[in-house]
Image (cartoon, rainbow, N blue to C red; front, side, top):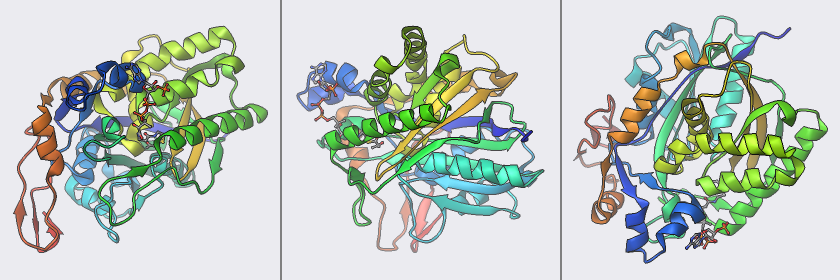
Length: 386
Ligand code: CAA
């Protein structure tokens, strides 16, 4: 039998400022119910300049490193679509900040919101063929669409870190999955743009088409086994999107199974509803949210995960919860992270949003946004980061 490989530990981070979306609705002259129920979001994280993907990724990973033998980490992957450099992998900055060893591959991966899953699967394959080694995967992003844009309400920021190992304590990954990839222009960000461009409604259609196609293909290959499926998670650009994904499968599912998946979906969106889109990490934040907010899940429960990245790549894969998985979660730490945040006024949000890093090589010292975060970007100097 194949040695079990999967997620040994998970942790996440989000910056400590948020905008209440009722405030955004009022400012944009929109009915607050549209954001609350039509989009399904309540709050969104607003990052200050010192919490970029490197800082957020390091802050997420820091939460899981306690007691981990970091000398065994042979692969460090940063998955992001908010890259800070065209050449150097953000993983190298994270490696240095966390004080990790140098006997490892350290790289960055990109394919929109699918990047986290690409990283996780590559890490799992790596661990399968490298006995004694583990892999650290970090998915970190800042979702920016622009002030008064159609996507403004679906912004967010945060990072999820996952340690991938043999005989994992949290979730074993089944090696078989179904993927789909094809070039689609639903959402993208050219190199010269600081904000994403999206054909909003079209992107929803592509997402749902991928759900349908991949579900049928998985069923045809005997992978869904939905009678025993404890939960089905979705990439969550905003919670209504995941809800639409689940609803689109209703007629194909036994009513009891659909009721169970719907109940568990509610637990899976608790964190995302208050953080917003974190692109590569969204699906994984949903998994953490599910495990922290549904006390009825138990060892041996099988969970399906639908990953979607615009552009577009999708994958449906499955994991099985391991004995004692609750002991490696930190629901109290999650609560402190979410409840310790500061609420911004609309003006405060717009001011922070409009700030940018210098591009001329002059020195820029950054204000500290999160007094509790262990890592941050301190300043820029001669085009280099400190
Ligand atoms: N009360 C309750 N609901 C209301 C309402 C009210 N007063 N007013 C409107 N609504 C509902 C609408 O009926 C609609 O519901 P359905 O989607 O179920 O039809 C919903 O609120 C949204 O309203 P609109 O149809 O008017 O949509 P919009 O023009 O505001 O755009 C959006 C919404 C397309 C999601 C836009 O925010 C956007 O472009 N977001 C960024 C792109 C995105 O996230 N795409 C998702 C798929 S791509 C992906 O997943 C990758 C990724 O991470 C980006």
